[in-house]
Image 1: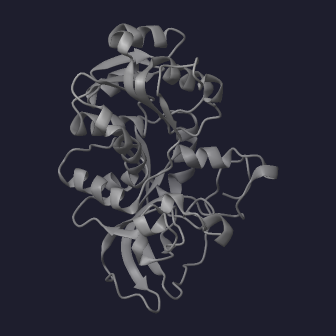
Image 2: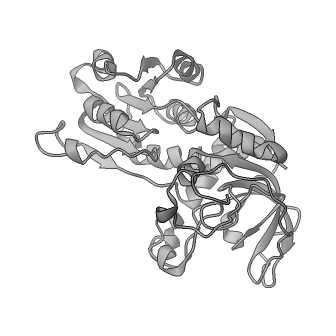
Image 3: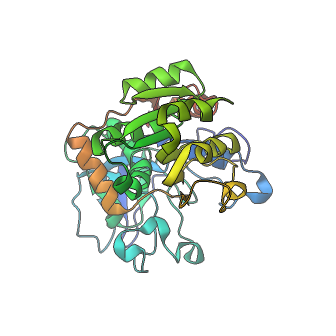
Length: 341
């Protein structure tokens, strides 16, 4: 990324050298994500990162070289990168919740591709070996998107698992890159009925292919149509992978008493106007989760090894990386775009 609100460019850069405590990865796959599109769309006066910046916060690779002092991982190990880097020592980081590090901003610590050079290159630097998770014989191209598109919905779903018992309903808004993975996770981890919402019949058919029991168009009639399925009880948990005002309004309209609303998508909507004693059923919890913990990434990879997750992937060469981002921005991808050097 060279300029805010402009397409990224393919450029030659020097091969990096790992410093003390760092690891050099030879990249085997890098995922393109809607978060990238969100960042690239930010105006110049609000852009928070130094430019130019190599994109790619979903990364997989093989350990190429170890910096001085690194002895906890071997050269040649196939790994994925845990993206939300933290300080490693605060209260949240000590639990593996580096996604909620309390010191990262003050210390100038940024995720790869979101402030630090990312994985959309042939090589990348990882700041610490603790941010690498070995994947064994898993295919890195099929696996790399799980570092965000798997970890993020998994983290959101885990918080609501106690409510997703038999007879309960889970609603997934947006059956794209994260949503189609969330549907598979819900189908495997819970006995809840799953209702998927999206704006096209094609996406709804895709949602049913990956495990949704019901599929409803996300339009002005969505709340009424979902309520026809759930009845007066409403949904026990709603996962909004879009995050714009219309979808948040749908989420707040279909959630039931004691239900959860997780706003995962990086849209511009707010639930504030719909939260209050008179605004929704009693004891509704509204969350805005971010990514997930290191231990949760390990759990997601275990689900992949068990054959639970089938991520829809469209491959692009590094030379075609700019086209991957064009397709992403135009919402023309069925699942995830993965760039392969």
